[in-house]
Length: 143
Length: 143
Image 1 (cartoon, each protein chain N blue to C red):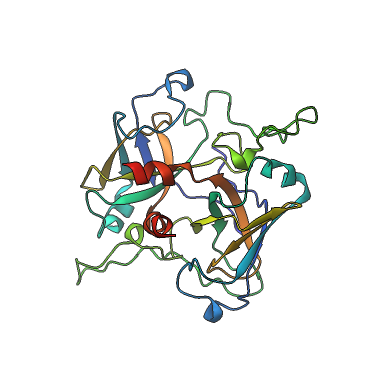
Image 2: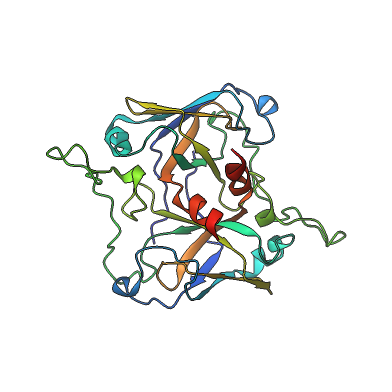
């Protein structure tokens, strides 16, 4: 089975080193741009400002000359001496079997194949994988 | 840059053909099991019943002998004659550049490397990619 990903664009953030990245998403954080490759731009049609979107991105260092800091070692958040520690799937750590990051944020602005959101916490030039309408956010509220 | 995915397990649903799959997630739907491979089971530590999780899965037909119905053709939901149609990224269609499905659902039950949720709409044996705590759901409510 094919299991290869396609990068549909990249994310511009103010963070050029891992040390500069904040530890979490902040709804009041700085503006970040989701920049789509030309062939995907028209697929944004139907999305609107204010709408919540689920953003999926590839949590590997975009600078390929740098050693990869995001490597899942299989030890996760657990070790044998501390059974109460949270495992990988209970955490938002980038050290995952599949280093796919996810964030739900409202669209601040949308134009010309570019979406602006506030407060992503990933490195500048992080590769973009997908954008989906976050309809389940509404469903989750109701449940 | 590596862009290859790892399957961490599979999802059991009642749907063995695409025709049998419902068109959307239903919070009242039948029970479905997220079944992790042995090496990932302890990474569920820290997740609890009632907690909302983001589930990521690979939307390609798990039966590799069947022709692949989920193929992104590049035409998305738009065509040149109807500029008002929604594009791929405004839809939950499986016909995406990266066929990664996402659902946010509460954990009904968790035990022995298996999580039960209600109402997923994907094929039986769909490959599982990731589970994350859906903390942004709470943040989204507050915003």
